[in-house]
Structure formats: structure tokens, C-alpha cells
Image (cartoon, rainbow, N blue to C red; front, side, top):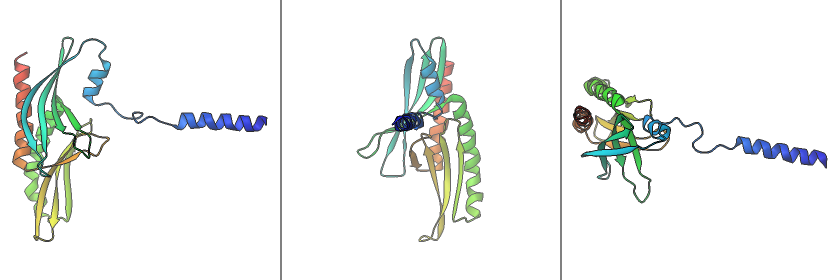
Length: 192
């Protein structure tokens, strides 16, 4: 009997330690770190930007620049929201200023590589940039066998741990949206 009690106790202990919550092991984004570390007052202020249109089902991503006021500090984020639908929860990317600068550089580099990527005539090719927070932006070149041509499709992955990929319409729209967000951040920084 003592052996059975001992085995049950060991089994329960092992089971309790083996279970993990959904958030264990997940790395916080820069936005989450700022909000989680704050023990005093925090204020958010958004400056709306034009929506970013998706190439799928007329979906529009809501965009804005969010300024986080935490004491004497100010933090700037490009906020991209994929609205909730009847089949999917809302998804959001919060891209910090320095990451947005790097993303804009990466978009420029990737945009200039599209023609050479298409000349390679791959069946499938991906070119993307990823931030430490897990936001990915890029494009893929895919062979359209029916039309006998290669096509470029831009995409953004909004969150690291979810299925949050959104297909975007064109290089021009991607470039305008991200450079416009950076310009708005710089404008808001100058107003401090």
C-alpha cells in the first residue's frame, strides 16, 4: 500500500511540473516589456494612418502610430491591426521605431531584388526580413503554371506565436505604408 501511495504521489508531482501554461517560454515583445515593467501611470496616444489593404477578400489592416508615455519616457510604435472576423481573433503588430527604420531599409533592399529573383524563374522563392519581436515582412515569387509566368506577392506576419500572415497588394503600397509610418513617427518626435 505504501508503494502505491508513493507512486501516486510521484506521478501527481511529475504531472504538475510537466504542465506548462500557454505563455511559458514566450519571449515578450518590446511593447509588452514596456507595459509589463511599468508600475506607475502609462498612457497611449494613437495617430491614425491610412489603412493597409490586403490582397485577400478586401481585408483592410488598420494602422496608426502609437506613442507610449511612461513617466518622462516616450516610445513610438507602428501599430498594424488585423481586425477580428467571425472565424479569427484580431491580430496586432507593434513595431518599435528602431525596428521600423530597419524594416524600411529591408523593404528597399528587397524591392530592388525582385527583378533579379524573378529572372531566376524559381518555382518558389521567399525573401523576408524578421524583427526580434517576430514581425516578418517580405515577398515570395511563385511560378503560375496556368498563366506561364512568375508572380510576386508581399506578406506580413503580425505576431510570432500565431497564424497571422496577411498577403499585401503591391510593392508600392508596402513601401508607402511603412515609409509613411516612419515619417509620422519622426514628425511626432519633433513635436516633443
